[in-house]
Image (tube, one colour):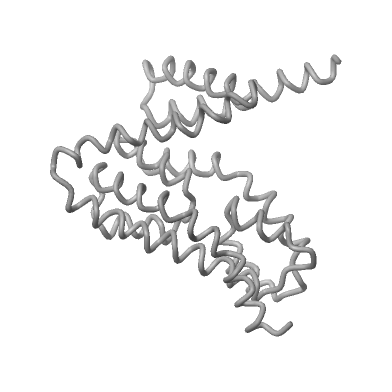
Length: 229
């Protein structure tokens, strides 16, 4: 299969991802406007970060006035799984030039990773670029659409959109917590630690430390329970 046909195959494989990104990206644009970011800042975040959960977390941290370093560290912690995902994609991909892999590794998300890994054969350079192009394009374009929509909403609605950010996080947490008590314990522990740390340090560092400590403690507890069985 030549690169052009591989690219088109990747585009087709990514259509469902592009559709799925549409409402999430629009919502991100809406919330960015209500958080106080301008159009260029909002679009730039989607262009250079391209990580849904991390971008939403960044908005919540910007809203409480955290520093850039705190946001970067939190983003690193949230997205550390991408290191393992990248290594898996490297094993699955054809023997393409390293420079090509460096380019399309930027576009690896939970969704593009899943689609790539479920292909029967090795994925080619062209396939990965096609898959990521349509996914990335949908995310960036619909971020801009969401911001424009938000800018044209009545001021009262714009101000109330900040509440939607926290409602969205609750909506993401509840289904996962219902299926796995580990997620519920992790979230509860992080919330308690964050509340305690916030009394003594800045909100940003409280989030970073609470996330790291809670994750480590929960993993140690669960590992100990498994080994004792």
